[in-house]
Image 1 (spheres, each protein chain N blue to C red):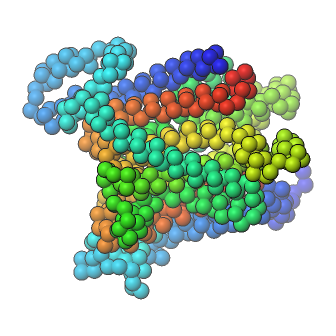
Image 2: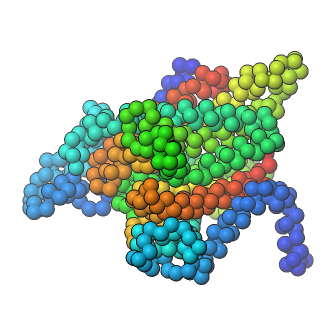
Length: 309
Length: 288
């Protein structure tokens, strides 16, 4: 197990290198002079000489590899640069917003897993009945409806018409319900599709027939024997869905005025606040990489074949 | 080979096992119907609409749906029916373009990596791993954040997000196919790498790539609409369904029709491509 974990950890290093490199390069691909972009409106009226001095001072005249090393060294110290707009450290901006995004993502993930696995198992057990058909239809529609539209529909019904829940903002648990359901249901659709397939495959195995032949209760056969063996693909898709949740949260946060990192990122893009864009992208990606690492390690815990294979 | 009349070829194709499975798939019919309707709407939008999508009528602003204006009017008195119908053109185009670009670039990367293996394969696939390390919408946002908002950059962004999917898919097919006996036989007969790769190995990937591309169009339309909704895709006065939704939001809770119809259009379109993609997958790969 330790060997597997270590191998997997080492395998993450090139990915981290690539991700930080890409985020670093964003500043160089972006059209225009990075110094002018960094100063924003303040750059107007500054002499060419002063701009060059500033460039030297910031180390932007050095070769790219040297700058990249400096960038990574900064990251390791927790220095993501300063926001152009607010002048505050990017890390502080993100730290203020991250709890809201994590709260939304976790709540949505809980809904997604509970709903998705239930639907998927039901569809698999009642294969080729109306239950299966309905579950497939719900999953397909769930995948196809954009969250920024389903969120609006939920808001119309439960906030504006019925007045049961607040339409936007963050505060009490009641504020969390609509955004979490919006994101959760769209992810549940993916999880349901994978669960159905995985459970169907497991149900076709010999050990399930053996379990049935031994006279085990059908429920026990499904829960203990089939679902357990179907967990691997389900856990994979749940891990990947978290990436979808973090990304999809950008849209949902906009719909419900939820003050998270996603909203921060979109505002930063509109304001062309590049350091803040880079920081938000980096932090969300790192979270995603860590989650998928955790998923891979959990495989080894679920399935011994993975750690010895 | 003897020449066969055209209708005979059609009959052969129609009765192929994959085609038979496709025809019996309920999703195939619904999906095809939706997609064909969409293409027709996009093609004939100016004929179907009662007036141009940009024609303003300030006396008839924010009118709810009626017999005269089935989808209502927006804040400039423009016909929502006309705008939604014309929106199909841009959505279809911006859905197809990134998929086509990603398909060509990604498939080539996958083909080369899987065929030649070795260090080239390792480098290319690590690069794909890095792209896959980002959540897809986030990567698209990063690209748009770098290049600046706008529909061209949004299309480039979605194409970049899609490339690794085709690369990985094609590579996995190629890895299996290059070991097949007919490929070895062609090699023994003196076929060069280029011919082996394109003539003998690549055709194996056509089925999976077509499935992936069909599902990919749905994703691309969804993603572009999302970017436009965030104000990062299509810029006014040009308008797509995502931009209409972003605009309609400002007139909530009164003018709900501004959001209902564009949203319905996106959802139906994506549903159509998803149904079609699923049916194609079930038809081409019955084990899955």
